[in-house]
Image (cartoon, rainbow, N blue to C red):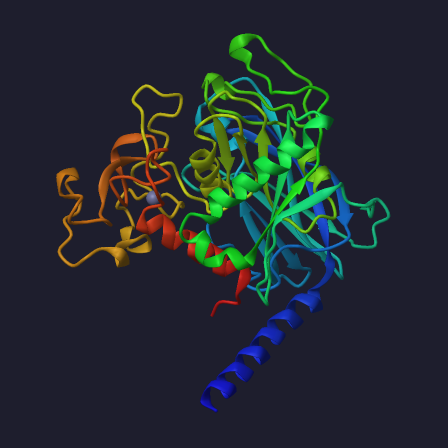
Length: 423
Ligand SMILES: [Zn+2]
């Protein structure tokens, strides 16, 4: 009886959250395309255009605050100033700013919010590495605006390679083909299936497999393979991806975010994985933007899971290489927003709760056997001053069999954030 009452109360609470959503929003998506541009110290955000997708595949609860801060955010407020929805993101542009390159550059930044019922104010900000606004834009969106492009077209051909059965909100992950010719779609779906199996074989995804849809979207390319600048190979592919981003050989990215979001119009997914049909080694993952990884390399499975840790979970790299393109990019007097590294500036906000009583901080590497969760120096591209939770982790090496305890906990938290109303 007690359980029945508690369940009834939970249902009532859930329906009241749903009511909050449907009071402010319709069950469709407002896509806002921004362009980020400028030089470090002089960055601006411009509005490229607005469009509407037929359904909303994001969360309808926990609306007002994203779980992790990211390197940028978008907030929808009522004209009375009430926050209705907020989400965070990162962009390759943040990394370009961190590298301090001084040639003015620009990047596409499409963001998805639920379609408001009334006029709203939308604010988008890009944050610098000290978490201060590097640029912001504020504009009013009127849902009756005739210039909001309607994208009601039939979705592209797609195949569910894993289907959620959870009796609640699902997390939709779209897997797109990059560098697969039209006659290679069967191979692509098979690679997409392998990617979803690799992710779902890792804890905590295995525990929540019933909450995640993986949907392979057929996006054929003119040519087979992807661009490898080191070899002088530039190919005509669906999303124009290439290796050697920022001259880092293994860094595979795509500038074509608007095209990626075009490809998932009216497909119930808000997280993107792009599989690049190449045996070259590499990948990239950008929080709430996309994962892009090579599907024909022997390390495909660990790499796709690692990059998804970035793009879905907001996890930081736990490795560092002296002299790498990214070297000492985190300021040591600020706590990073990523849940799996710390500068010890505010460690209580991180994985302190996972430490056994008496765990030395920092934890010596030679006592790792005694402390599976510890505070090990080196991570986030820094040999000194940045600490990671374990000696090894999926976010550190391809040889690690699993995510470390702090990453596992952080991923479980974000899965629950998207699929359950939290207190
Ligand atoms: Zn980890």
